Amino acid sequence: MAPIQVLHGQPTPEELATVLAVVQSRAAAAQAAAEAAGRAGGPVSPWRDHARKMRTLPAPGPAAWRTSGWAR
Picture 1: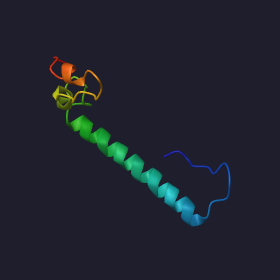
Picture 2 (picture 1 turned 135 degrees about the horizontal axis):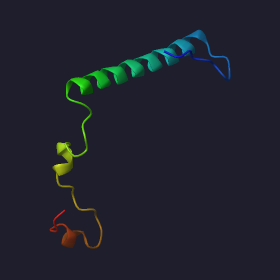
Picture 3 (picture 1 turned 180 degrees about the vertical axis):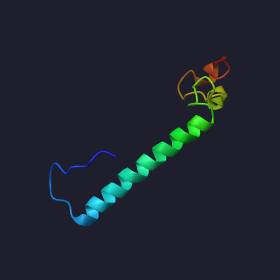
Picture 4 (picture 1 turned 45 degrees about the vertical axis):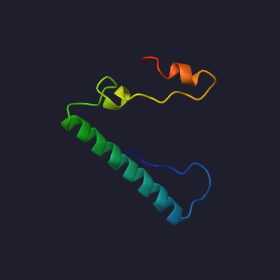
């Protein structure tokens, strides 16, 4: 992990500990996500994302009733 420097202000030890805890937890979460993606066969491609197959609701507007039947 790269060294962290305080560039402006004088944080209290409690504030500094809080910031370091947040940074460390975010780094650990990113590493865990990268390891999980590696075990699952790589990052999920938008083409493999099943959520994109779900139909979206028509946006409200004057022609929403007409466009709700159109294929997407």
